[in-house]
Image (tube, rainbow, N blue to C red; front, side):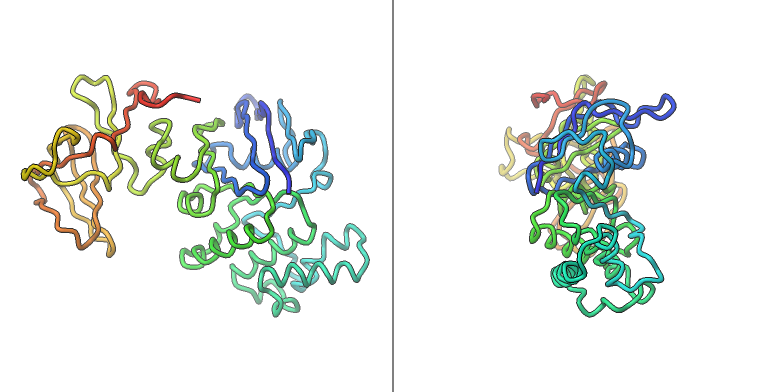
Length: 342
């Protein structure tokens, strides 16, 4: 295991800044997720850590050693991409053995490592098959086994689940997280999928336009966003943003915190009352979403499907948010007004 660190790391392409002076350090054995929309710089950052892309400026350190100018093979890392890049004419065993043969390890050592990796990933019975005979999830495990046999100090994973359908993705997330916990290798994982990030990451670095907007645990990122970008990128539906009457602030609150106002005294001064014009009711099986407006702002409320909620589509109803659940943002910069910036 090893700590991965980047210091003032920058990458420019013909005047375009893909990664802009990023400082970031993993913990030893951590599952760290780089999350953001397409084009935010997350894959470029990963490729610079792996030595596949030379930085314009800054340094990459692995295990405390500067590796900025070292080739990938000298960094003690293993990378897995969304394509898996398996050799179609080779068996699973030979695909896994490929980096070991390239390193000219003794045959007995190759066989030991193949058996070990196949056992961890549950692909013992697939060793004689060809990639075309495997499912997407099985191919993913073969790619992981091929990376694992190198006994790297760091795993770099670039959207390895993107080729799987939704059902297989859920089981693959579980397998991948369990695998990382068992081997304890520092892992940096790139994705644009917030469900993957929230479900697997020890910490998440939310990226936008070459910058890290916030770094924290999944609960910190979701419950305490640093700015409006993070607030609206995380969550489905995202955080609601409603301007105050004087326009000086944006009030942010999660859809699950927006509930009907009760006149029976249960709600007092610690609640903020809002007129909610409900336009649409969406039933999703386990939950129900109400879409509407508070003034000029589009707002969503979320409830359990069997919840007793008093509302009428097309009518303005009084809803409320507990003041403790409100986040306050600057409408011009997007930064939090009630949270110290780091």
